Length: 77
Image 1 (tube, rainbow, N blue to C red):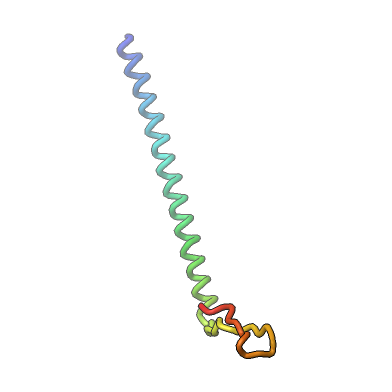
Image 2 (image 1 turned 45 degrees about the vertical axis):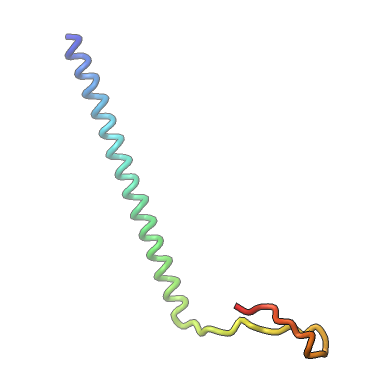
């Protein structure tokens, strides 16, 4: 009787561990697919937003005085 009781207890413990494992796998799949969908949507929206973007020049000059020698370039990518 004790052997049956211990066997049943181990069976229930293993069953609960298996159910927890399946739930964690399902949770991981849900998070992974959610983040994948969100990432693809963000990339698609960024591509749609920047498709008609005309590039422009970032370099400009700041004149600190009326002399040409004092012109300093402040931004040049």
